[in-house]
Length: 343
Image 1 (cartoon, rainbow, N blue to C red):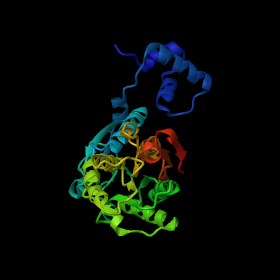
Image 2: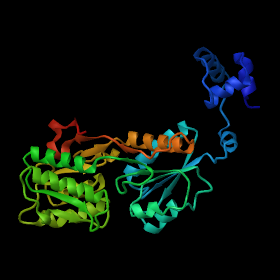
Image 3: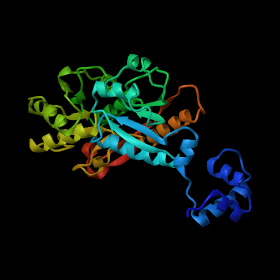
Image 4: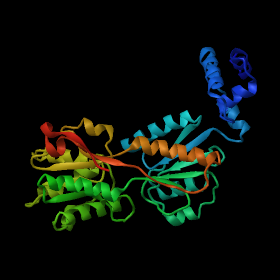
């Protein structure tokens, strides 16, 4: 037999209602009483029946996390944080990968999963403001990423323009003057457009001319896209002496092509990525990168969504998460590798 609230109440010498208030947080309980109840819970190994709790509230106990790519380490690491934070609130996360396809993303926002989840955390790749304004589903929604602004939903993002400028400023401070951007898109969809804007502003702020031949558009954002995209640049008679990559995966591909061409990183080519995925610490050389606070992003996304589900908050909020520049061997070599604050 499992341990019940009544068992806990008898052990702690309080009423069942008091135990329920401690476990569920319905009403404030005196600290001394709460401590006594918690001691009984720990001693008896009580675990709340979350399914029953959610059913009583007319909920499923599930929230969805919809991301563009599950095989992208950035999103995998973000999902890991969100899953842990959701568990702390008594929720289970259902993962949904849209592959960045518009039709799949529309299916997500229009509620094909509405009957099985209490809320949705969504990182769209193809949708715009009008798509969300036309949303028919009433399930609480929190947006993650920089693609959509000024909509009536909680939104967690970082300042991509400022972060990209920091990356370029770092390269300029090392004496680099022909700085390429690899990972631009034909579309101006964010965050690719924002990172390109930050790159452009950083180059101009350094008194350098923006050379469109150093801006490489890629079909995707994986390692192969970086490897293939940078190859023509490195074969030029006037190749770049630095690359700012849209993300770490592209940066890894850039470094691989540089190696295959006999170039040394960072001596011949300095490389900066974006995302600070775990892999960045273990590349050879290790990768300098912009590190968004993924812990903060995942935590804020879940707590904002739970607040919506519980009806505790009504006003949509914008959350801007900090970032930092992590300086590693791909720009300064092994001897000078360190971490620097970025924002």
